[in-house]
Length: 228
Image (tube, rainbow, N blue to C red):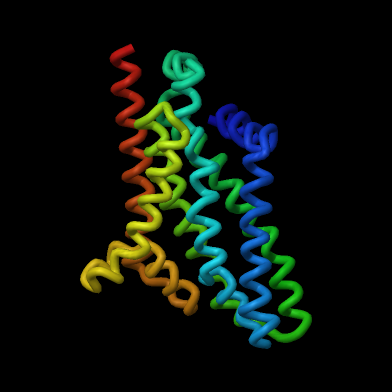
């Protein structure tokens, strides 16, 4: 599995994808930092993560990480190598998931420079900051796992990306149409973490959905392998 993680991780930086993801998110984060910290004069680091620029950046850049996971393999014909390799499909899928998640972790580490700036002017709440960053990781895990699943059902990267973006936006706006669907909004669940609260039910939902998408992807790829 380490070979898959290493290969996928390197591929993100062998192409512009990794740099674009980190760059676009940090630009959005900088805009959010200006309006939520500098303009307002507060020292709440957690607010930067849940502003519109940061959320919109995630909606469009996470698909960049995931849309090529399996779609590109199918289009170029290298999927055959994966299906016939000694590595199990489970290790391949999990390896791709971990590689994409590692880009998220690198991006999150980069945001510490904003935290350092805030600390220069005041003392942000450490507990809330930790909860926010944990929630951010769980939140991204959901969309990475779904994005990889979307990539496994098509050989067109653009279609996989559109499916991921559509899923992101639909789950975002559902509560606006029906408040009873609030429990299906991952963004609303994430907002709870930015308040310094770790809801066990939300945490379980994040993890369960992530595992479900990974299992669905593994099942789909295994069926494709048996057909081959």
